[in-house]
Length: 197
Image (cartoon, rainbow, N blue to C red; front, side, top):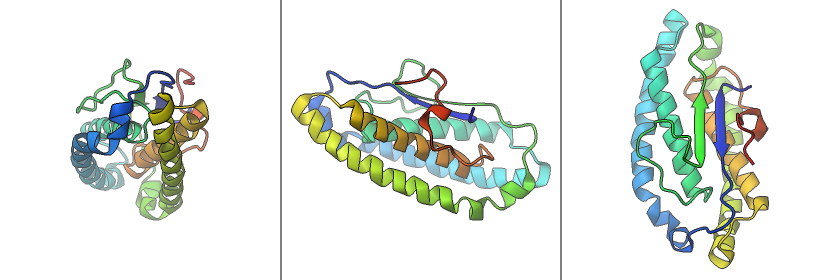
């Protein structure tokens, strides 16, 4: 199983049409807080890059912060892409009751210095695929926006590609933050611990 697990519950019925209509405005405070978390996580990942090159280990404090930042960003993306109407907490703490969940295995005892040294280059395909997933997820979320406004529900046929897009983007971010050495899998189920819908 991939070391970063992403799950999202399908909230099929009873979607909030008003917050969906104004989703671009509703998400602004979380996007600002998420941006601050991402900037801090990126700075820590740069520090971790040097630490791993020197010691072969990802410092625990840096790793834990980056996981929390990744969890918050996954929730913000889920809100933005209409996976949920529930506003996420501003912290990055685990919450099994929230419909979007991310968990990570502890840092490895030893990281490959070569894989870390080459990450800026070997991550290029991951970044490109994350962009493609973003386009696909955005297109499906746009159609889903209309579906929720007119029917009050997000069809499963739209939920699945949106969920897959957010999952891949989350795993790609984990790869870029050096939380894992493995390329992100394409299959959503590769990271689902509880076999989400």
